[in-house]
Amino acid sequence: MSEFVKKFDAKLAAALATGILSIASQSAFGAGTAAGTAINNTAQVSYDDSGTTVNTSSNPTTLTVAEIINVNATVQTPTVTVSPGAASRAVVVRVTNTGNAPETFRLTGNSAIAGDNFDPIPAVNMIYFDTDGSGDLSAADTVYAPGSNDPTLAADASINVLIINNIPSGLVNGQTGATQLAAAALTGTGAAGIVFIGQGAGGTDAVLGTSGGMSSASGSYVVSSVQLSAVKTQVVVDQFGGTQPIPGARIDYQIVVTPSGSGTASNALFVDGIPTNTTYLPGTLRLNGAVQTDAGDADAGNFESAPAPMVRANLGNLTQASGAQTVAFSVTIN
Amino acid sequence: MSNSTVMTLRILGRLGLIAAAVLLGFAAHAQGTNCVTLKTDAQKEETYTDAQGKQLKRVVAPGKVVPGDEIIWTITATNSCDKAADKIVVNNNVPEHMAYIADSAMGVGTDMTFSLNGRDFAKSTDLTVTDAGATRAARADEIKSIRWVFAQAFAPKSTAFVRYRARVQ
Image 1: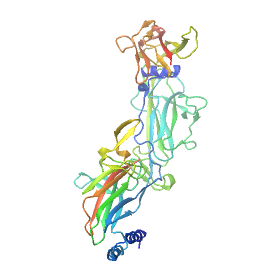
Image 2: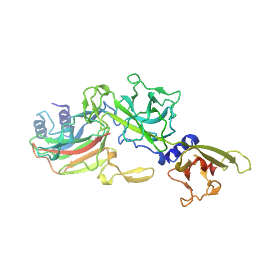
Image 3: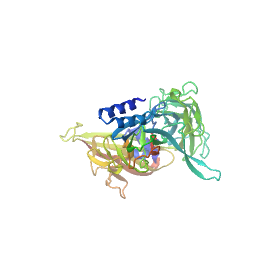
Image 4: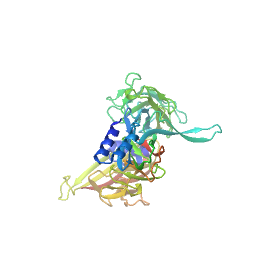
């Protein structure tokens, strides 16, 4: 189901309800106070000495913030739909330096994960940086070479990494294969609390945080030989009988979802965000020509205003035999 | 003689107090310190297991301090003179890069007040912040300063401490 939502995200570039795709939450402190920062404390006291108020200060106490090494890897694409025999399919993992100083990380990929149905076959170059931010392997992406371009991340900075695998042939629908990326701090890894003397930023000591200096995240390839494609078209109708996209004009959207190949896309859910600067026109949602009420009720479609305005339509189980499904709705330009 | 002692004497002189009082003051200050001295200490709480396998907590030297660590600040006031010191007020600004932890301030025999700006002090429950036109109770991490007013005078050679916790941001 979320596969299908993602497909729409990519193909329609529509604003999706973030709630559906939200992934991991951020760490509690962010990076925190930078390593090497001095925390100074001086207390004051006043008292009465024979009728005179005397003010005096304490000794200054200084704590120097040490480097904490922490890293958090989170998968950005928890499941990736693939067809059997597909080549160079990417799982995206974000590596974030959750420590308080710049740190360099060594990355390793692993596709021999227990508990899945098949082992994806690592590509010759298994790890790439998603240099162009496309979320998929493209010519602009830089291949990762351990020891030569280990990423150095500033505190709180993150980088998106692609794990590239080929998918074995001869798989059946619904089978899953997991792949994993691990990021390990070059300063060192181990139990939380271990101190690396003098190896922190600016000559401070470095302390391993709760992550132990390493973190891994895995995503799964899900075999689906049914593919869903979507084509979105729009027609602008302004209030003066023309086609100018001016405030008050109506935009009629039509999205045609076409299943192809073998297999079944189970409980396919269509989600499309209402574009910013437009307002959904109540009562305009249609599925295959049939009006859908805006309320979340027995019919397949509804409009939701939170967390972000969107229309939804439950397309049910789709096979190639189901044929094209047409969703239509209208908005007005604010 | 420290600078502050010189200053104290100058103030006493300016007030035109009688010579005896000046001499008494001088006698007290001649020891090289103010009557009341203050010391701040930073510590951490750690959990340890005793010989019976029981989990206990103790306060230890801070060691390595990293973001998220909770520091216990202890401020000790000592009256080193041979006379009582009255109207003792201890003030401490929560250090930069640290956030005060709610309800952690303590001081036996003191009246504790808090400030969001270092000037106006009130009970922590009376502190409010105006946020986008709405007034709300202040959060602990917005407290910038803590004040302890001792109710009783310090007897000669006596000492007392106050304490609070703050987290490294």
